[in-house]
Length: 111
Image 1 (cartoon, helix red, strand yellow):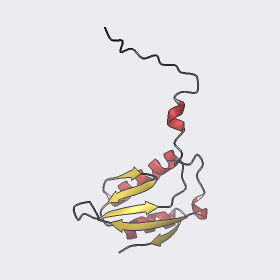
Image 2 (cartoon, one colour; image 1 turned 30 degrees about the vertical axis):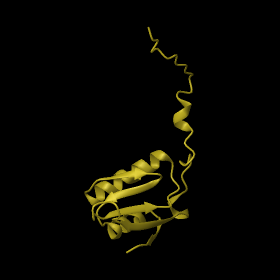
Image 3 (cartoon, rainbow, N blue to C red; image 1 turned 60 degrees about the vertical axis):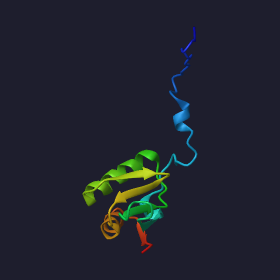
């Protein structure tokens, strides 16, 4: 007879493993202090272009909020991978316009 029950211990702090990700930032820098880089990439995506929003110093929640806003403004889907926002399609100019209005400095890179 195998024992599949695993003992779980918790505290009032909740699951601390979720808070230990080293790459995410706890604090966001103000938009005026950041330079955002917009890249276009289609490698490994079946020839479909993706706009990458890189070098953001934002907390995980702020990153999710910004990604949601960019997806809505572009009318397309996207995701966040390793602190980089990926927006489906070629939307560098539109995203640059939105980020500039929010106070970010924007550099468009790539082909």
